[in-house]
Image (cartoon, rainbow, N blue to C red; front, side):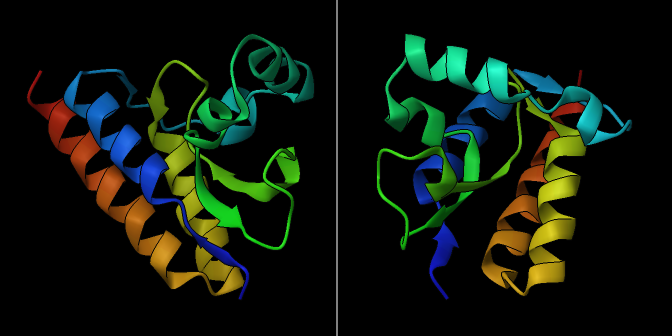
Amino acid sequence: MSIKVNQKAVTFAKQLIKDGKIKNDSGHWSQHNPDTAAENKFIDQHEMEEYAKWHLGVDTSMGEDTKGRYKFPYGDFKTVHRDGLLAAKEHAAQQGYHDIEKAADELEQALEKAANSK
């Protein structure tokens, strides 16, 4: 499979959670997931490498400077969203990307722990 865990994104998400930049939401990810305009604005203001950190999967068959390379978003470019992690975990499980599913699950548990310690 050409989609692999984006280890930089996992490390970045762990740091965000540690820093308290989380939303312990239980709504629908579609309500919080940045739309295409927000993604494009973020890319215009940052490097593609920054955009990549907000996605738990990397499709190595796609070009490095394309949005399509990055899969399984989990945040809104400011915070880690619980519902984003749940969506990433569910979609990864459905598509058979168990390493990404496991990473999303571990991040969700870390977010829950951080949220409950506040």
